[in-house]
Length: 122
Image (tube, rainbow, N blue to C red; front, side, top):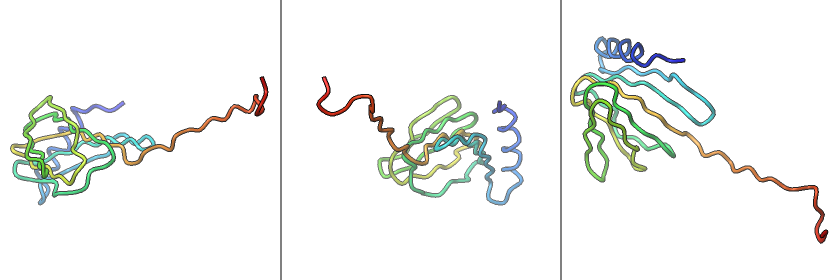
């Protein structure tokens, strides 16, 4: 089990000490599913980058701005949104901690063949 409050406290403290104003930790990795806590001091950013196949951003503390070609969206504590399937960036409007949930690859569909039946059998 992961305590998000403790992770948020720790990584916001580390972000405040870091020259680039960021700190992140991957706390869950299960197949293609990833969850990370990311702390950003006011003005720090995650530069524009490509989106994974699926992702959401949940703000635990503070305010962030998610920017893409479609426009900017400001999110505050307790707000969550799907990450657009386009290049995007995130900027801390004020000191903030977010949880990024992402799926890094699509699972191959499982094909099941019923071998109990033979072609033409009734």
